[in-house]
Image 1: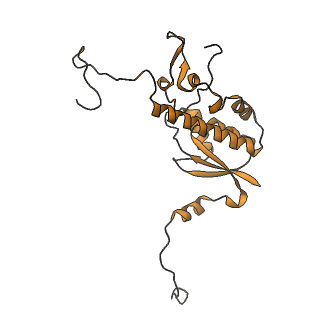
Image 2: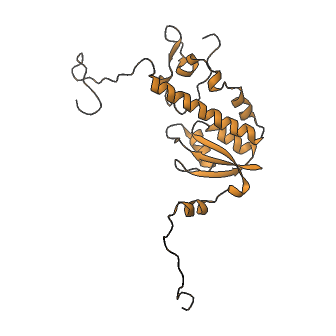
Image 3: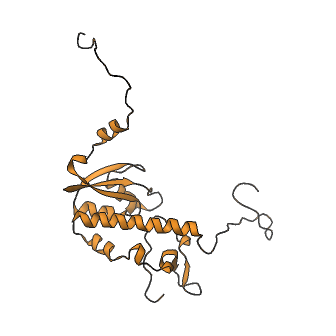
Length: 105
Length: 91
């Protein structure tokens, strides 16, 4: 109606942000390509031949083709049934690394 | 032999906190799509890995390294004419 917000019928003027519980195919494709770009950065540092602790940690991360889709599109949360939530609900998820989750979840 | 990193900032560090912004500042990057060159070094490698989600990295040879002025001149359009003679030397 006015701007980005639609008034809810319940509150008659309250604000509503609708966020789908899962990612669409497009968003998943974009997420995969972002993971591949980070893999390329780590690979470039590895081929340069330097040795540092940050590189050892980065090489321990799984690559995009080694990750289960569950790890690519969801992230661990202790609060929800199933202990997972959509990765798009993590703030700045397109610019942070969230590849690993606690074992067993 | 490729001896330098060519670092291009693709995503900004806005609202990622002082550590990430400080890392970008220490790499001398101020705006998106800016390109900087650094010789291979574990310290620089650590900085890149801190901002690995924001950055594109390529290994280049030493003769491909461009200074800021050289990058500016490459962006500048060609004049479309050549100066054959000029009275500038006479003056």
